[in-house]
Amino acid sequence: MKTLFEKIVAREIPAAIVYEDDLVLAIRDINPQAPTHLLIFPKKPVARIAEAAATDEPLLGHLLLKAAEVADKLGLKKNGYRLVINNGADGGETVPHLHCHILGGRHLGWPPG
Ligand code: AMP
Image (tube, rainbow, N blue to C red; front, side, top):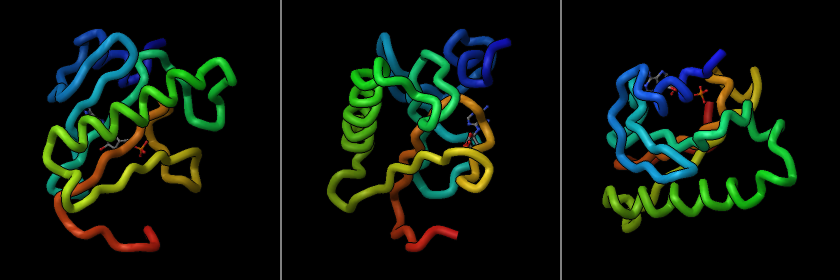
């Protein structure tokens, strides 16, 4: 069965796509927690960072570099932004397909709730 994000990759579910290449897709989060809130994820359905394999290392590097590139493209570089990966129940993960949140456009508090 496809994950939610695989369905978005397959255009079976609509999304506001901000960036796409062979390996990753970046979309706007449907329930934004900041003025700019994107999700960037591998097209390959790695469930979560804890399940990533050593062979995923190039993919994970690509994901982070593209997250920074997309953040820059959307004007977040100057004031900064936050990348978040929620892993498992205590981490707040709700979609079991690895994704990195890109949050910016306001000052973000620390520690997170
Ligand atoms: P997480 O809680 O870290 O697993 O993040 C999942 C994120 O996916 C949440 O921020 C949701 O708002 C977001 N989300 C859920 N469904 C969609 C969708 N159809 N399109 C865009 N974002 C979504």
